[in-house]
Image (tube, rainbow, N blue to C red; front, side, top):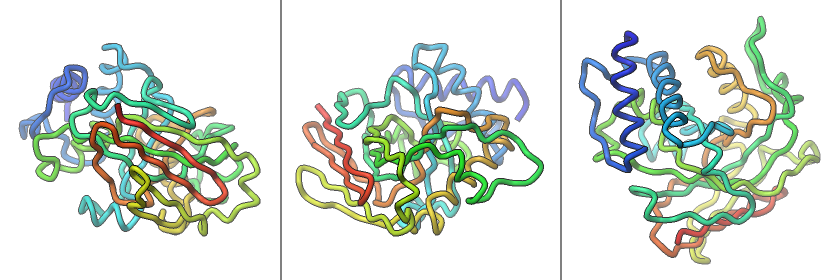
Length: 264
């Protein structure tokens, strides 16, 4: 994609979000062709969203890090996006259901960084990202299907639109997380008191911090290294569940506690 293509595509995607309108596939001549295009376009969309009053990114999210989500979306590889500050809630969050086009929720392990993960000679691995993790939390990712038919949209374009990202609820930070075995933690999600799914930390690429290492390397490669203070949603333990007005969503992850989202 050249600069003109990126400008045209970013304007379409950002305007769709700002104006609360569903989108179809981008025209072939301005659609991203690969992952590099996708993240360049994502950065341009982010600039337009922030300039349009959407707020600044406060953290990141990674989709398709677990078998259940890879099968659900038929996408075999992780995909990252930004999470914007005004969409973040803590502990118990309330959201206006009408502010979404087709809202869903996911059950996730979240990390907050006490140090950035800047470029370095060798790629990051799990052991290299671990010292940067200040706290680990439970989290509900809020997603929005903003497409006429998301299954007809190529993966690169989905990435450019923050891979469905629309907000989150973050639980209480656990700073003594090294006393826990993140791979064995079990998370459960319920809607209106009925359990709708569960999964374990090991479902996230074998270990949750493997996903963080993947993102650290990807973010460097695409010019947006992870920064101190950012949070990262590492991928859903439960298949996305679509939400109706009035629904109450609760998740609990062993050792990390609860988070709640209400849609009014």
